[in-house]
Length: 127
Image (cartoon, rainbow, N blue to C red; front, side):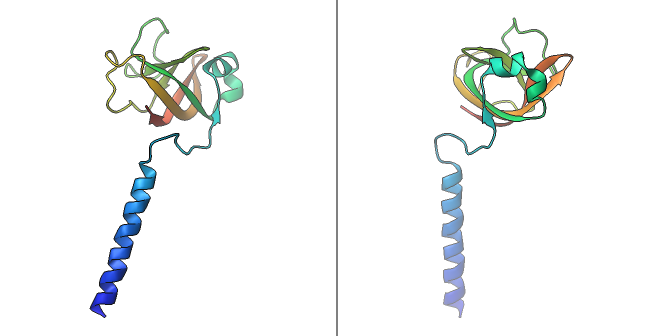
């Protein structure tokens, strides 16, 4: 009886480890947001407002020249070949807002508008 219980616990632990490894796998995040360009969002912000999207580009941190951050001073910028947009809500763990500019990044989040400025409220960040 004791051994049977121990086997069940062991199998449960193995299953938990497998699930953990799968969640940490390298590659594209499993997300359901529409992959769009930044220009799509900034050109038609009301069409994307409240929509979940995914953008990929380069991390620009606290780079100036993009206007005022829409939500907080800690908002940061992602830029693709079509333009740039502010991101708020999450800061990419492990990236320095000055030293790590130019690193490839993917942001999954919800498009918001404040004072006629579109931005992304990040939910998942991969770099």
